[in-house]
Length: 154
Image: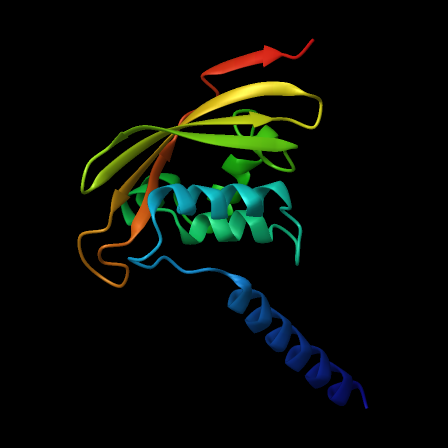
């Protein structure tokens, strides 16, 4: 009987994990850089939906391979997203995205967020097209600055 319960639990975990991975949007050449940021911000805004840290996992899915080398495995990336520099992006109230610069392979945006406690923060968000491999010609995030500006609302 105990073996049966363990097997059912393992099957359930397997199914729920695959369902969550199906919720992840993968990079694709048809997704424009501003849309990549929108996907990431919307996911981070609701980080724990549909599962724990799903927003961080979605954001990680669009991390450029060079970015993944710098940030380490997803567990380390998760810790970074919950650190002092980036924790306010999680569950933020509102955001806006403004194009600063774009070429055929590189884009830079100013991303403004309003935190849950009504602070305004601005981040520099950079993306590049992947040159080879599984996500060739897809826009992916190469870096997000720590907050460049933090202004308390009146």
